[in-house]
Image 1 (cartoon, rainbow, N blue to C red):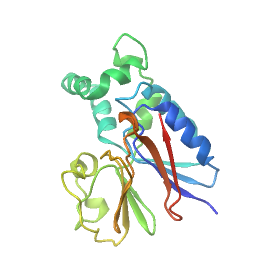
Image 2 (image 1 turned 120 degrees about the vertical axis):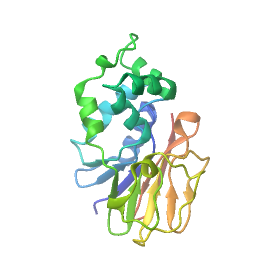
Image 3 (image 1 turned 90 degrees about the vertical axis):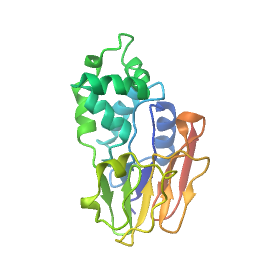
Image 4 (image 1 turned 60 degrees about the horizontal axis):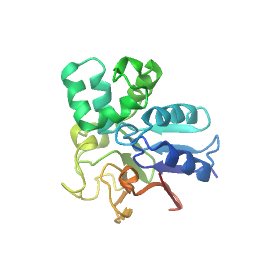
Length: 210
């Protein structure tokens, strides 16, 4: 049966992503939903983006946009956003492209990938966002700041009006957060924890350290 697998925040941890994809062994008919934050903090954001671009050729990849990805996009053509990005983890990302600190070293293909990322995705039983959601609004009316920036530490949302189970990343925790209406998959790979993936229909988990 085709699988639907969510992968939490990678944050430049290419070794963990390599290992978890090897364990999952994605097939052409599988759907892989990455929950955003592909860049910053870890040492190989370049490698992570290259891996995801390649993965899209092997299966159905649904990449969501994270807050770190959003800042990187804004930094491309805006000096103020660039300075903010440098204070927010962007230095480690640029270091993975070379030691000059120049954003022009980032290939257009990598920015194109980030521009292609979605704000949310849903199937019949679950929906997927990077950070959080407003429980009373349909997904197509959600505020981008809530979707990408609001932490579960700020607010654990109530069940969504759709009745579907939310699958989110963004807020690192020691263990997967499992609530009846919400699953938090970010287990802090870039902070010495693990990278977590989950097959949403069976509940099977994979976890690997960086």
